[in-house]
Amino acid sequence: MTAELIDGKKISQEIRKGLEKEVAELTAKGMKPGLAVILVGDNPASRTYVTSKQKSCRAIGMESVLIEYPADVSEKELLDKITELNADDSIHGILVQLPIPPHISETKVIETISPEKDVDGFHPINIGKMMTGQDTFLPCTPFGVMEMLKYIGINPEGKHAVIIGRSNIVGKPMGQLLLNENATVTYCHSRTSDLQSFTKQADILVAAVGRAKMVKAEHIKQGAVIIDVGMNKDEHGKLCGDVDFEDVKDKAAYLTPVPGGVGPMTITMLLYNTVKSAQNRLN
Ligand code: GUN
Image 1: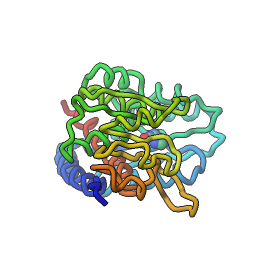
Image 2: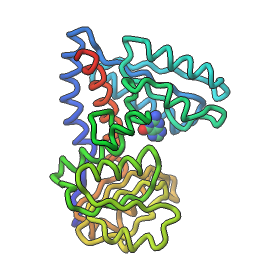
Image 3: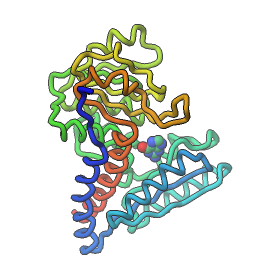
Image 4: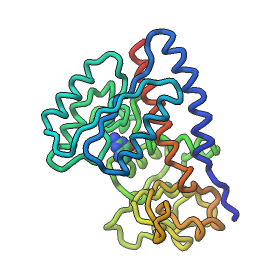
């Protein structure tokens, strides 16, 4: 193994330690940060994520409220709840766990959340601010990846960053954040012809496609930084990423493990955004 592992757990712990102090200071000023999480239906993966988000909030002294609805909740009831939370002074962040059932408009849900409480960074106003390089809530997963790169001392400037995946949650904002830091960015996706010709050029390769172990040694350049956003089950039902860890570990310079890589960072940046929202309220 020549690749150095990027330990998302360790980086997360360091950031969370700093956040814990800020939460205590905010609490002393009567502004204890509070996150409201809305879970619709009983998707087991969503429930696991939501439980983990709540536990992490409480571990650093934040308030966390879980609001649950059955899968057949009406769109109106959900939007009314969001409107109520927008007006609730004890709540600084609102998160609706995605995916939501198809009879509810995801666009309407996201656009109903007040941009000041949109700690996921999904509201079009916040996406616009991110694109124009203004201070705003950044989407947690790509934000976490940027923090990981900073931690290991990788400056994206002048580097070729290749993103596999173009989701609104990860792929698209990932490319934008790297571009904001002066990387040259290429987006690849399911319709890309000759994927390998692009990924082999990557100084920084981010895999966010949701296909178990699809990135092999033949896809990457010697000495590349490989960031694996995937959360899949392999043929034995074991958690694995989009990158074939065993295959690339002797060719990459840096590599994120799954689990223990990007995953913990996503939650950490959610905590960061919620603390920031509470701070904004004081200023
Ligand atoms: N579902 C998968 N990832 C996310 C996320 O970052 N935020 C929300 N709200 N839902 C998700």
